[in-house]
Length: 469
Image 1 (tube, helix red, strand yellow):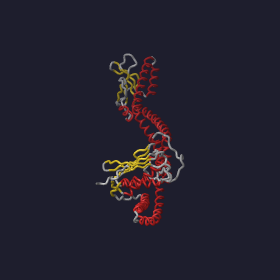
Image 2: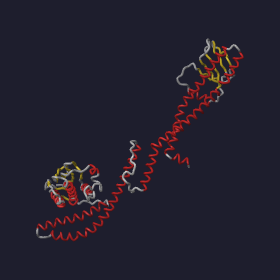
Image 3: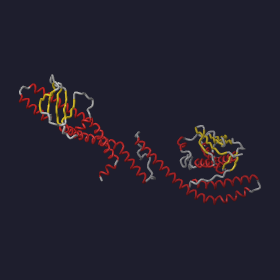
Image 4: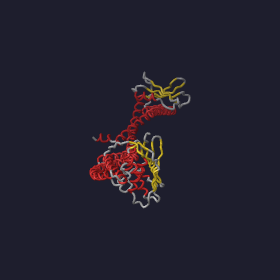
């Protein structure tokens, strides 16, 4: 259980992998180091044999030389030492083996790197052969110094060396692994574990409200810091989406109730307006017809808002409409609602009276009426309030520019200008006006965009399809 708990964690896997990688690196280093150790071991025997030869020739007492030779052969595992003179080998000590296999190593040949093949043969061989070492002589008149050592002695020495290297490599691997483990645990594993805990907690309670500044926002500049910041932004976005859904559900319920009661209230108003529309007096008749249209728009507005809260799009009823008349009517209604303004707004409708667009008149009226209301709200802060509508024909579209002289829209509001419930800068606003207006424009084959905004004023552009002649 403890093994599964340790290996199952990222930190445990990092520790094990670090130890394995260091051991592999040590193994790659060990192969040439073992070959160098073999060559050094052979050179030490050859050097010691050369010094022994000088010592024996310098001691006239044979018994002293014999004692020195036996001690040397016991300490170095050398079986025979000979000097090569005139092509003949002259024994210094020991006797050559009978019919044993002899492997010759000439140390007089300089090599930058030792032979790996010979090291493998000595390490993995049966150890029954003898190694004949040829080295430079230490006595004048001698061509070469020959030293004979049993292969099993070299094999045992190399195995002892390998054990020491293995123990040191294991110690270095564990120590390196622990240091890397501690560093990675502090730098990577701990933040990721904390992030995973926060993610699990957020999954269980995604709607839980948090106080501003209670969540840690990482100041790290690396990938972990980016991951933490992205997670924090994701939680903020998800909570905002939940809040928006709650507002939509509340709005839908409220509009269902309002729609039910308002239709009853408007029924009597519609009867009166119908009578006024049929009055013989042309002035009263015109007022009655206008009142009928206002009542019908009021009912449709409630139904359309209810449809928006339920994500149901109302299909537009397209027909040719004279735009100058519709714009004038929408502007007149919007201006009538803002008669309390201290300075009178100068309104100009520069649209040609013969311009006809293929649109839904009720939907388009709502778009212009909403844009005019927003502009008049902004013009309340202007010393010389003015509002005008211009038009230009681009391909098969009529592009209407609604221009005001207000103070402009702040950058923060511009980011979410057409998102539901995210603006509502005006007191009492819901943040739905521009969202619905853009959807109504696109449903008719057009579009609504913010053309420009500054301290000198704001321009919205509404594009609508032209009527075919």
